[in-house]
Structure formats: structure tokens, C-alpha cells
Length: 542
Image 1 (cartoon, rainbow, N blue to C red):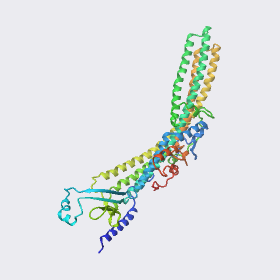
Image 2: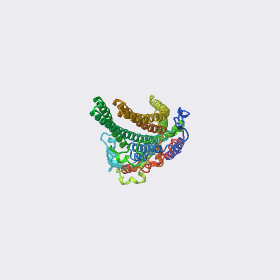
Image 3: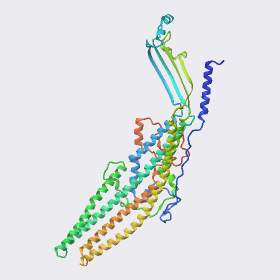
């Protein structure tokens, strides 16, 4: 017959073999498949000669404006923008959560314990009367079984076997969430480069409008002086003077509004650069055109299908759906029994009888237990099944969100593209109109001096010229901003972080002072394979 010890060893071996077998089982729940999304074959304006659909790179698309000041501003924003730093730290958070998920693949409980206790049994303890009886006292005259000391030390471990793939699905979900956080960082970088460029265009446009307004104020003041002189000689009426003052006051009234907008735009740019609000005189000066950044006449947009690869928000939506798909398997695993291996080994001793607390490390003081166990939530009253349904519904929401993100991405490009093309046409018409308004003003002034026109015609010509100049300036700014919107829609700009750390050195230094991050602060490797991942599952070092 087998001894109890032999039976225990056989049980342990069987449990170990079962564990190895169970670990090789497949995971419950669906395997994620990249969802299909409606994508146009080509852009609506692909036939326009100004639109090129060949391959192109958008790593530093803002260089198309050929403005060194803008280049410097974007470099500064990439280095110091606080929102981008937040996105980088969220990658570290996601990476740490992945480490937690991986850790659950190993024995979930691993504890060392120890204690020294003074044990005093209650007189009302069921065995107290027996332990304190005269018979026990005579048999063990020097032993107090009701009050004694004991000490123990040991190791405890418990391992739930990943039979149904619950923990592997959690790793899959956490890994996809990490990829989504990298894509979110890239999306923040796309927005940052576009916002800096747009704000810079707004500043230069407002500066140009203010310059036009100030020049027109000078012209209108000169006109007022001429009218006042003519009035003094009796060749002009009081009405002419009041009309001239009205036009001058209106032009001067537009200047505070433009100055307010300019200050607000500079404040916005300061925040994008990670600076307190200020005039940015130092940041905005430097070699270059200094005026409104000029958009090139043509643009390369590729094909709509490129958006699925390039746009970070599309990638993020895909990875979020992948993460949620894995959560269905995690929820389904609760429907089935959980198999575990657990055990503990240690030493225990007491001062009862002739023993001593110092005997704890004697081999005879060892104590252990081990073996397999099973738990099964058999009476869950639909709770687990409804949780599976809830996770599946959430997954379907994210699939639809992915398709909607793709549609919105195409719409953004289409909207920006038509705005860019039509702004070019509008700018051409306004340029011609501005030249005509300038010639008309010169003619009216000459005719007024010759007495062939009244002063009202001069005022009308002045207002028309100012309106045309201002409209042309606004349109040139809109033209450049439309080009920025095209590049934003195409998902350009995030590539500048390739090979760089996603968290700045100063932030990593502060975090390393507080917490032991090991090698996880090396964020350059997290984004290397963005958009090229073969599988959302990987098992990094703990």
C-alpha cells in the first residue's frame, strides 16, 4: 500500500502535469480582427491640377512655408508643451499596467511570513477543561497547554492556472492599450504642430491687418487735413469734415479690437510653447519673411486609404477596439472553473513540553501543505453572462467608433482641401480687386483736387480700398490655415518623434527620483513599431 507521503507526492506530480497541460489551452473569447471601414477610392478634388495624389511624407510639413521662425516655434513646442508631456507620461502609465497584467501569468500570491506569539487560551475554550484537567497535569507536570509561546516562519504561494486564457487576454488588452496610448501621443503631436502653425499664422495675419489699419489712419488723417484747409478757403463744406472724421474714427476703432485679438493669439501661443503669457517678442523675431506664411500653390495628398496607416487617431481607435475585444475573453473566463495550485512550507515551534522556541529551524519543526483546488461560480444568476454581454456591447461600440473615426478623417481632409483650393481662387480675385481699388482711389483723389468730384467719392474709395486690403489679408491667412488643416487631416507631423524619447529628460529625472522605474523610462522603443505591429500581444520583462 502507498503511504500518505507517497500519495502526496503523486498528487503533486499530477497537479503539476495538469498545470502544464492547462497552460497550453487556447483562450476563450474572440480573436481580434482589424475592422473594415468605408474608404473612398480617391479625393473629390483629385482631378484638380493643384492636387497631387502621389506618395509623400509629412514629417515636417510646416517647412513648406519656408519660415525659420515657425520652424523654431515648433521645435520649442515639441520640447516644452505640457499637454504633450502629459501624453508621454500616460504611455508610462500604460506600460506599467502592462507589467501588472504580465505579472498575473505567474503565481499570483507569493508571500513570506513570520510571527512570534504569546498564546493564552480562554477558559471557555471547548478543550480548555480537558487541557487543564488533573489527568493531563499528572501526565505533563511541567507543561502549560493553556498558555504558551510559539514562533513560525514560512513561504506561501498560490497560482491560478490560466486554463481559459483570462490572464493572457488581460495581457493582450493591456498591450493594445499601450499601443493606443502611443497613438494618442502621436495624435497630440499632430494637433500641437497644427495649433502652433495656425496660431503663428493668426499672429502674422493680425500684425498685417494692424499695419494696414495704421497706414489707412495716416492716409485718412491727411485727407482730413486737406478737407479742413479747403474748408478754410471756402471750397469744402462742414459735411465733408464730419464725414472725414467719421471714417477716420471707424478705422481707429478697429485697431483696439485687432490688438486684443493679437494679444490673445500670443497668449495662446505662449501656452503651446509651455511659457507664461507674454508678448513673445524674442520668440517671434528672427530672419525670415516675417509676414503671413505663404502657402505653396500645389499639395500632395496621397490617397484616402493612406489615412488608415498614417492618422494616429485611427490607429488609436483600432487599438482601443483590440483592447476591448480581449476583455470579452476575460469576462467569459468567469463562466468556467478556476484551477489553482497552492501550498505553503515553513517551520513552527513552541515552548510547550520540553521544546524551545529556538527549535524552529530544526527539520522536525517543518510544516507544509500543498495541492490543487478548484473554484466555480455556478450560481451567478446571470451576473457573469450579462458582464460578457456588456463587454461585447462595448466592443461593438468601439468598432463603430473606429469606422466613424475613419469617415470623419476623410471628411476633415475633404473639407480642408476644398477650403484650400477655394481660398486660392478667392485670394486671386481679392488681389485683383485690391489693385483696382488702389487705382480707383488715386483717380478719385486726383479728380477731387481738380474739382471734378466731391469729397464723398473720396471717402467711398478710401473705405473700399481698406476693405479690399483687409479682406485680402484675411483670405491669405485663411489660405495658409486651410493648408494646415489639410496636413492635420492627413495626420502629418507625428513622425518627428521617431527615434526620440516620448518623455522629456527633466520629467524622467523627477519620476526616477520618486520611484524605481527600472528600464521602463526608456520610452524611445515604445513608438518604434507604431502602425507596423503584427500582433497586440507581447510579454515584456517584469
